[in-house]
Length: 627
Image 1 (cartoon, helix red, strand yellow):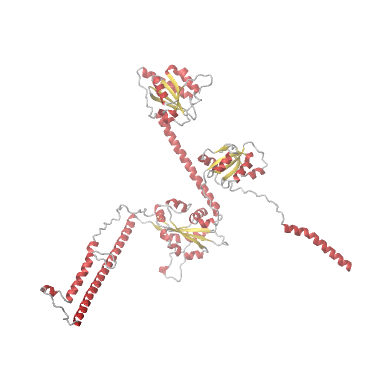
Image 2 (cartoon, one colour; image 1 turned 30 degrees about the vertical axis):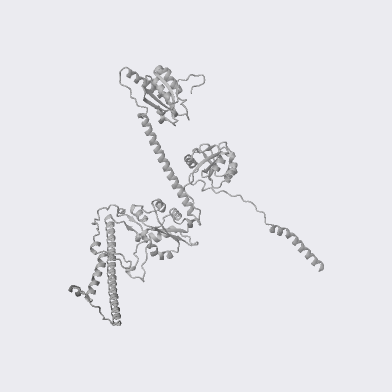
């Protein structure tokens, strides 16, 4: 923008039509175009350089203009940027670009571009030109630098976030460990649930009781929580075995009169103590003289061993299925034979009844035989019945007749047609279950080695029980911002904060306006009011306010604060600078002591005491007078 009463050197371009017309009108001239966005406007720091480039350097050979990128499609990639940018155009194409508000560099580039234009007009090498949609080398280099800078910034923020969460988690565990001194737990791997029952006598020996037992299915998400600050090597075989099934977690409790260190007690019992042999047990039933941790630990098997075990298990299953099929087949044959015997017996009984009826009616016992061939006669009698029974049994077994709901069993030849793949322990089978590397240490149980690991594990596995003992805090704070007020408004601010409990995360009084360069003065308003220090004009009352509920923040904003974080990310950085992890933990606010008025009964007793004494004195005087 030109000053009032001063002629502007730069022409204004605000849309595509004006852009095309300007390029066409100045096709043979060098165009120095400043591109800007509407929200920030053109650069004021380069106005003198622009004037010098036009009046002293370029003259009529240079056309100065400024283009609003918001409405020009050719300059779309320059939108929404506050950094000054100048592009140079010759014969309808880009030739160079400059970023920043460096007036000296701008004049040097104008001279350089004019020299290249002059050489081209004199028949020298043509200038290197780029289409409007093409990215210039300087622009690409700057974009790459910015991208790397953004990646580094994100990595730094992520490292800071991880370190902050770790510090907060450590602080939370330290605070909870004070109330959880009499609690501890043991984690048993899925394949070692029996270890808890094997070691049951040990719990009585160390004078602790089992408070609860839970089976917990660990996943990749909570494995880190379960092994927080542990001494377990989290190798692939260890983690795979821990996730293969539900782990058994046992909660232990010491008696209230026991002052021993619970962590040391369990660690010694499981990791160092060697069991003594029992006199009443034979040698083969004695417990090995090694600590319990080593007794239930193992080394992961190789892929060949695992495949061999899986193959043997599969063959055992197939053999069991074959035995079951053979048993069913024999059962079907027996039932078929019994059914055929019953049928023959019933037919024989029916024939006997018919014979007796014929005799009772005076008829011959046997009807006159029909004329049949000799072969038919040979099949009669008992031999014919046995032959029919045998044929019926074979037919039932062959065809797979279903008797009394039993499953159909086919011939042995048909059953054995099932194809069993050839086994090779060194060949990986497609779709087989994951096999962890061999030779890795896999523990069978785990006991936390320190108070922090113990507190974190107790909250993870027995949250409901621990809630009755201590307050469970979270290392993850809700989204929050920093709000700073002048110290004179501290009491008004506290009145608003008291109306919204849970909104204020931290507070403090500081000297200075910059959150990253302040001096701490006091932790609370009460401490500040009791100080004999002179109040200074830069004293500020800072609050870490949660964004979960916006009404409290709106009320605080109505009190005209000195500073509010721009967003949640900025609020995280600002609050971390003012309120580091552990801020205020060592400060204990002194509570004011108020004298309580004595109860009415005490007042009445105190007031009645003089009257009783006067009555006693009068009684003594009367006795003396009578005497």
